[in-house]
Length: 446
Image: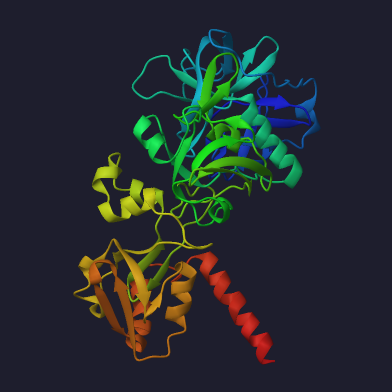
């Protein structure tokens, strides 16, 4: 259950978490008992926004759209409109803007600009508009756990960026990232060490994502001085409105995919102006798996899956401390080295005579199969399925090894699947890939 509002073009804006993993969506107008079928046009899980459309002409009769406004200033009042739990009628809650800054979006685990207000955002409020005057100032989406009457709304620049991306490409295009990690240079000694003059300000580049365009032009230990002509302070912030400051990541996130930016850096005591192309970057370990079926591959009772944060969340609310430490560290800190790379793990062992003695090797990463480094789950599947040797060897973390007689293991897979009532040894994405590869090979043979 959630709320939403109509914008121009006969579209409904709501939160992504309201329609996440949806199968069927119904919407109801205020003051009407009739529910209408809605289609999800686009979902942006990182920014927690979604666009819906309704085909029924009856739904749109007498419907007025809302216009998007600007970011409210501190101490300005907004009215949050929606249908929170506790009743069926519309609810209006007033709140005062207390803070505007990048915030962790709980649904997509992304840092984007958000507006903090002193009004409660309860379940059901999600997706409703925050009104200032006669325009929308934001979309209600989350509250602060453990605090009273502190809610957050998604500001208009984020909404506009989401909608414009959908209009241009027909789907959600994502938010750009520079692909770097930076360290503040507030200590005078670090500034002197890297040759910064007293009037210079900037941040130290500590890590660069190999898949980003910045990897080609930036170097570790560069001092990032400016982004598109805007000076970056020693704490990583840039000017924002009237005597406010915001992290420079916000400037990056507002750029469209494949747009270029000019960055000024200090390298070995000399200033350089460099051009970098910005695009959305995916982490090595996915943060969420909404609207997707899980990928898996089962062979001889060994269940192989790509490591994801939702998998780690299965270890409970305190997953950071209770999940396997090595996997958790890799999920949060390791960067991808190539496109389509995945960390493939042995998640569990379905017991059978074929795998007796290997049952304690679960929750370890698979490094190699028959001496070949594993790139992703599809790669592992293709190596196993194409095995022509007598033995099949898996090299895991901690120098652990699994060795199987391939033909015996292949026969065992069928009985294990039957015993556990599992219809397929692999998920649909892998079986489709195997089928397409088979068709390609057949056509080449012909």
